[in-house]
Length: 462
Image 1 (tube, rainbow, N blue to C red):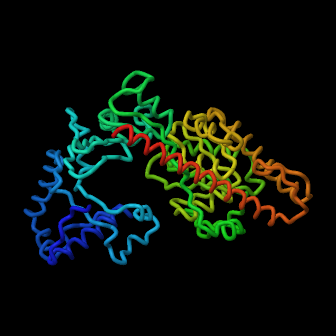
Image 2: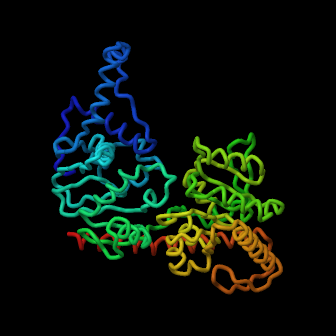
Image 3: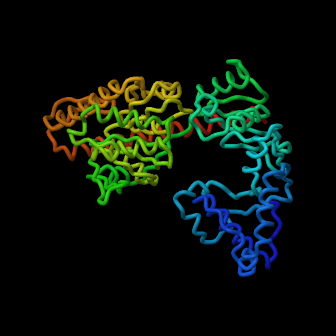
């Protein structure tokens, strides 16, 4: 970023528009129509012009750009943006830790197009002045001018589970491209599967170095969380398909937090919840995920509509998600296969009871720190096992509440505490305060370990 050339005065408005559209794309995925001027609107009405645009689009797909040179990249310094609205956005809060952005037009799309071809070819990024090229997902892109290349591999799910939206050929080639540098795996299970499926070995394969990096938990609690978040009486949810909002009381609901697709197995947990009979106790099942236009989502919608205590929220922002987890009776993750399992990690850091599938990555989370006290692994072959586990968690929480009311000794969050006679509200507030304090401890610890592992890998690769 330091060697950026000054922008001529006449071009600065265009640069500002480019910056705004780039940041809008990062925030919402919105792709602006480049042909919105009066002249362009007139041209768009001409059949020949519209035909030529379609031809250009087809040619771009048939002959994608395979090499990007430094002079073709566009960059802007975030620290020079004055009073920019996008830097105030919650979804772009990570930009506060970034000095600037470098943009290579359509490089991501073109890398996929090349990986889908009969003869695979990687995209070459001939960037100068960069120390490292690090990806957050496997990409068929190489950067020969950088000393360090490290790619992040989350899972190999498209190779082992058929009902995914990823093209197997493209995904396999993107995984193979990771051989040319170092690799960061989000779990030991992913690392083992990568070596087995791609190289037919259980040992490290390919050039560079391997590293399993446990990512930090995703929730963010504000400074006054103990005084505010821990004292909420109820959450008001705008449920899909309902005219009025639903009130979720603390410790009176179960959370499923994931996308709605067959691999996530939400139908299984729906049936287990119904079988548990907790509906008659006033317990809700809260599903945070957006339904798709497919048969699986149709089946989920039908079952949700038949049970008033099942709440479908759709997308929720990070602030509401934080409240959902903090006040939950339990978190459920019945996934058939996972690369890691962030909802399970978030709940374990809070000390919220978790019921998770027997996925190897869930087992890895259970083995961390004292998480085995909070993470219960159950087979997804029988809904009755999950129904029993849900009833057990409900019974334990009711017992804790009753003991607090009567002043008995109770094991709370791993500490023996003599609880004097108190109201249920006071007990609930203290429990949530304990969850917040516990979460902050583990968050700091895991973030430190994460940074150390990434730094170690980069130093080894240098």
